[in-house]
Length: 225
Image 1 (cartoon, rainbow, N blue to C red):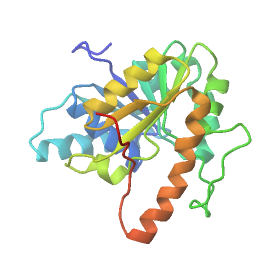
Image 2 (spheres, one colour):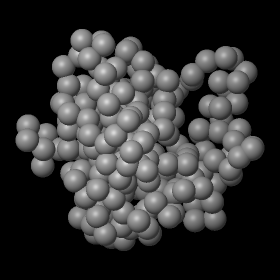
Image 3 (cartoon, rainbow, N blue to C red):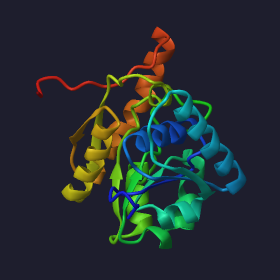
């Protein structure tokens, strides 16, 4: 647990656009953030750049540190996985021992280039299902944030998006919903990890919409106060 009693956050594959956006938001929300990468020197560079970005905004924040992926997973109380689908399985295998007993937030979308605007779910059903099966029952996998634009996360703005949160353990889902709300969005319980397929598939739908309307579309749920 981080020094300020809030959970520390490991972001595996955290040097990409999505990982950077999450790091900015979570550090601002009061969490120590460990940015991970296969190449730790790139993680250090990213952490320094993110720290400078928050300083330029005059934002108080917790430390952001760059590490290799396994170290970020070991030190994070809650671990986010934000890697391309092609790197999903090998990345999970590399951190499996480090995340036993933890909540792992899988943000991966099974996009298969070059046809990323077409839904192509894997035979296992979803990236979330792959993660839960591979990591085992001692890991509480939660799938979330596939439908939030990295550009929104990185920008200094309110995010007009709702987030579908799936996972087999309600308490784990709630811990992720708490993080989502701390980042300025609304999160909603959306059922077991099997339902991750719905949010993952919607990403390709949103890619089509974004291309058509030149925007960064997200989801909003109606009828819920």
